[in-house]
Length: 201
Length: 94
Image (cartoon, rainbow over all chains, first blue to last red; front, side, top):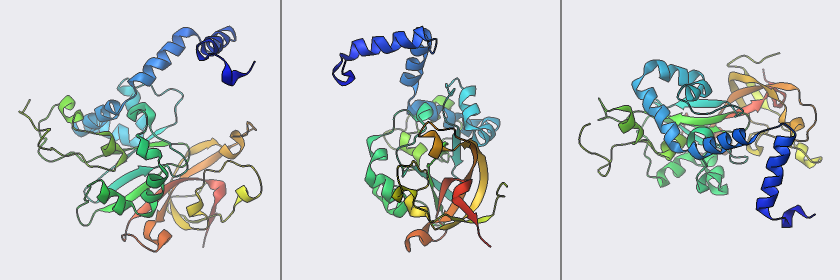
């Protein structure tokens, strides 16, 4: 049989049946993994960021061991590469890229955006990172140095951005709603924009 | 021997891809460049073996900081590229 021409539904059913018959993975485990994949979106990373902004103990855990911090919020990390977290400071900004392929912290950010995988982003993030940030409209205050983290091997990296001014007293969900995918890659910086601001909660 | 934080290292100027099939996690743009070890990230199966389903011994992985402007002769002073590199790609330099 030519696998490339096989009916995909029948092929999937055959693989599932083989996994079960060989005791590798049962239907429940497959369903759980499908659920975890569906739930893996930037909202998970944003939840971690918001908690780190409001809970110092969690922030310390997140910087020391991103995987354990994610698991403590119920984000499934089993079998995945270790998660590293890069904290921005008033003097230092981080930008994440994978020049070799498209390594990305999928458990907490979901599927990478199309541009993250593009040759242009991957080349320019290391060659001309400030020019790249400028095209995103991201302006680093003068005196801020930039560290580009090339995700070349075993870890997956996310950025913990600085909490924007003017968010004092905000609840975790409200803070989380502010954090975008790009803020956790480092191409953008979270800010209270006109369209996002609303009444205090 | 594990490399200590702060050790100045040179990335091996080696091109195994010119000698045959291989799987290498050391980017081209860093071969032969110098940097300093930030920290040991852990020990992981050598991907150069694992990619071919061969026995893959655990190898130390380091976060290494390279001065970004020095790589290209342009850029802003103080900027850096930080990259994960396996110990067998690093040579300690005096």
